[in-house]
Length: 367
Image 1 (cartoon, one colour):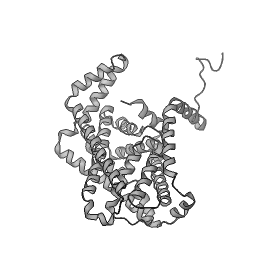
Image 2: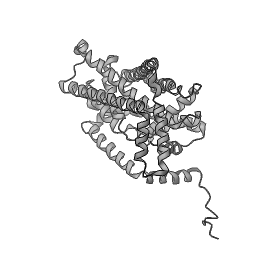
Image 3: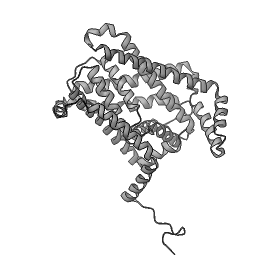
Image 4: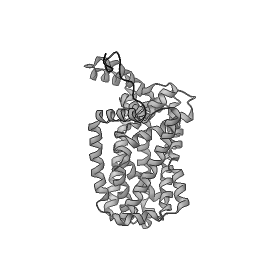
């Protein structure tokens, strides 16, 4: 009998060889997504680097205050803690005694997946990982992740709006050009419109739950095997939005969301100080808003999107020379990816998971 016959399947490949086989199979099944993300990254990297004298960049990034840079390294992962604290408020609606270490680990693992794979799969891998560890409903966990992103958008737009309203008070210390100011105002208004639209959709789903579930069932009617599962997940997802019942919790969550983003602004401010860019703390807010736009583009590791918008913010808002802005962007991006992945791989090793298993979580439960 042939050793490869059904009765004698080949032994499961292990070690590096098995990892490579599974990795290649995963890449083949997602070839279109990877190709699209690569094209977007390359285009944005072209616009990022086209006006830069790269021969000047090494000298720009070598001039650093080491103690402040080390402080920035420590602060780069602080947002995981504040995000986990914020998430705990939402998850408590389903389960009160969720372990904080699992909330923290899921946050870090989600960002690790998004850092290494296209499509923002970490946004799904994060809640699914927590749901499996804590025994909560998957749809509910995914619903809390949507609320997180909604509040991120709202708080960022709020900070930018307050910044623009207060601009006359510090106009002399922020000599930004008219074009850059108009562009930032447009992006701020667009962000507010988007955030309000998302909020309206989510509230409509919540208040018209039964109708929304029936609509999903009707859409999935040609696929009877998936119909019941999809309706169940939609119902659980809407349950994840029941957080809106309590005004007190809305306020608490908004305050925690504000703490998350003020902490992120503080990280960038310290990073700029480490490279002798002395700007007031509040002037970093519009820069962070632009980097958040770049980071939302679904390329692996934010490559391209973050680079383009970060350099745009440094040059047009903070008046940093293009070569220096490019160098600082490369460093701050590499710093965040390195810290995230080091923490992520440490958690994967502790839990006996592989990165591909975590990625599959995000792929297998897409709503």
